[in-house]
Image (tube, rainbow, N blue to C red; front, top):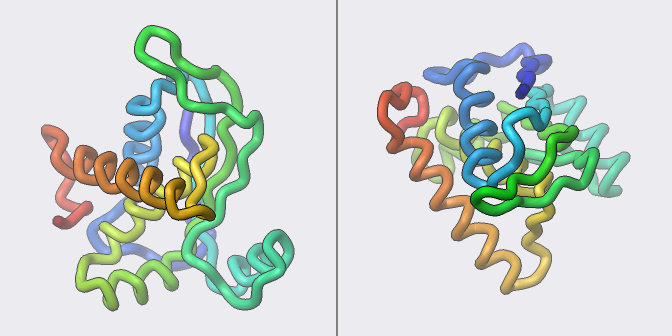
Length: 160
């Protein structure tokens, strides 16, 4: 189960909480995580994100996404899924996402989905601290986002 809570007071145009949950589930399924594995996606305002950013990473100001793994689940493989268990929490800041989307020239809804993929991969142990890790994670992130946006019956919220 994937819970989504919008505590930010912000609505992302063309995107609802259901689509964020679908995106996270899509990533977990693609990474062969047990269907009963649980996680949450929480949208927070800039003040809450800044507090989390400073508390956990000792960095000032809000950031776009943070991930808080729980059971340290790792990707499984076809026929041998990881889990079940508690994957963890992805925390997104829609205001930061909207600014990044504007700078990148795509809809805020697409940025939120990208950050959901990014945060979910972090929950599964992916990182981008080293150049090789970054290449691997960002290629996987791009592939998963494009597959999610291209799936049959995809909602229009993802933009393109």
